[in-house]
Picture (cartoon, rainbow, N blue to C red):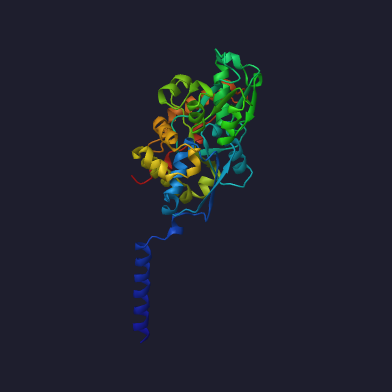
Length: 341
């Protein structure tokens, strides 16, 4: 009897193990029970892969429990991770360079955008006689949040005509209806923002576009090469401690990138929350068609692009010593390379 009992027990154990291997266990896909992602302006096309991954259930499919917390701008989202209230940032790649200059090591591990999609436009209401960027001296420029990538691009454009960030006043206006209202009311003279905010202001003639990085050609002309944009990035320690969670997040974003590459404007419109449309669904669809090429098709971060980003940052921020930055610590494609094809 004893021998028979042991034999039966062993068989049951083996069958149980086989069943567990055959049936996917959701929690086993991640080594962190919950991952909090901080983002600055979730409704923006800049972060569309993040929204698609959430709305299509890709994070859940990859076995990771994600909470997305939205902030007014990328710099605010970054502060949340630095402060410990969030684990990962969905934001601009160049922040990893700025952080390293302050001896804080963050690594971008999957790309959402391969062009900044940031547009600098001037108010047709307060600056009807605008002729050149030099006319912005002493003016108010609205950005999503001071220190965000929208601020960086504006600074870069100003630098091209010999102006510094201190020659203007940067005002945080967010990335939604508040930004549109600020421009229409004449509270700011120019705006550095993204879609759908920019397309909304273009439609009614509230702005005149000066610099447009929604297109790859225009981006390369402005920065001298490819410019990595929206990414998921996290402290180095997070990637070392939770590699399974990082892989799950990467898989979800890559899946979203691929879905977007094949999606129609109607597909996207039906998938994102109605609040993203800013009251104009048709304009939203048109805008998606305009920015689609700026969204990464595969999540890969361009090594050459990281060089471009470093040059751009060092060009206007005297606190960044390009020679002291170890770019290999600012990004990795190791998780993207392991993502299911």
